[in-house]
Length: 318
Image 1 (cartoon, rainbow, N blue to C red):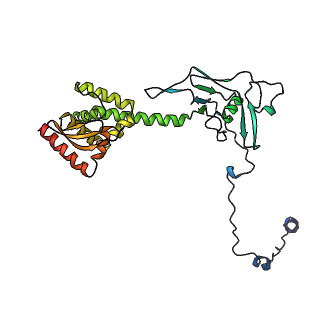
Image 2 (cartoon, rainbow, N blue to C red):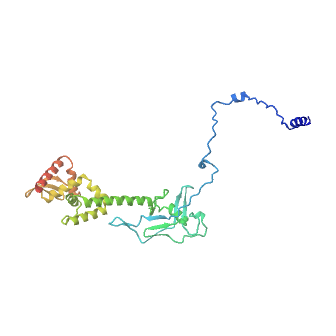
Image 3 (tube, helix red, strand yellow):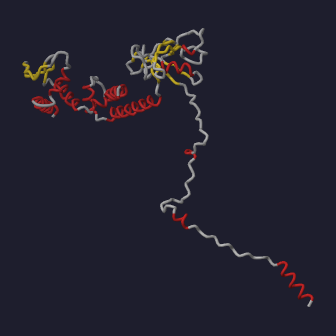
């Protein structure tokens, strides 16, 4: 009996009290006030590049030197290359147009000065020496920004967009990528032209050689070698002439002259009829006879003359 009473009292003391849950009422008026088209999607995180608080990245400056090349005082050699003076000097002071201040300003290159502008240099600073190009070029390293600035903005620079045109340009900036592209294009043309000179059928090669004024009284190998060297020297002209319709006409004219079918004089072209000469056309003074006659044979009465020459040449070759 005692145990029963003890258990009832203990259970009552240890039993957790439970409280009824309070019902939360939703304010439907607030929900009804929210527009139906509101997009409840979570906005995407901004990209790092869009983040205004992203620290900027600073690229390294190029340490490659800027190269300037003379365009004055040079001479073009027969091989197409340029010969430059061993030493060429330009003045280290100039008056330029400054687009920032919209004024004319005097500039000076003085080693040790931070600025090239005279009004920003020390009062006792003086120009010490001219700027020297060696063998037609001067290379300016990144460690000499003052010299680069001077060469970029002086009037002697052809590439200066604000250059004052009352003074002649003396040098230009070397664009290596542009120059490399030109070299590659030339070398490709050179290979194409030389390949044609070596593989072209010999009779066609001889005909083209005559048009170009190459001596064909040689062996096959010698003629091909001469034509290959001509193709290498000027590949563009070699290929252009080969594709020119006037080239085959000129070949016909030269062959007709060699077979004594026609006579080409300084001011006229004539048929050869024994000791007689029958006029075909006159040639203007100062104009190449073969060039003029080739133009004449392109249309009209000249086409009939061309066919007659081809007909008579075929008889000699039959």
